[in-house]
Length: 68
Image 1 (cartoon, one colour):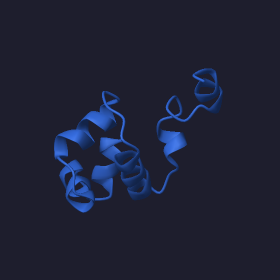
Image 2 (tube, rainbow, N blue to C red):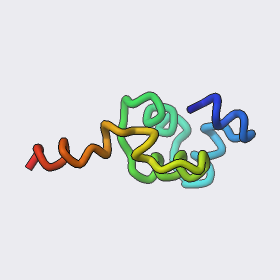
Image 3 (cartoon, helix red, strand yellow):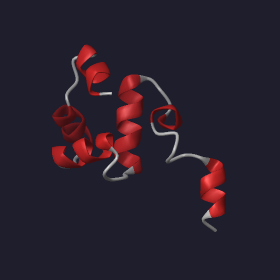
Image 4 (tube, rainbow, N blue to C red):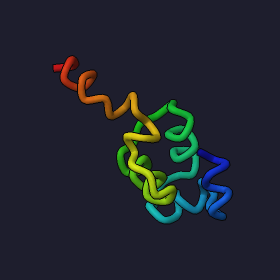
């Protein structure tokens, strides 16, 4: 993911600045250590990919249904 962003000339700090969050949050979300829909959507939008494709485990409908 980081490589794909770099290819577009975008750094985590750029995404953080765009959405008004700390760069460390963008880093942690990208590494899977934290979850933030806002950050996930910003990264996915920048990469022109759906967040479900980048983080399939976070968007697995079966898993979400099992948590009820």
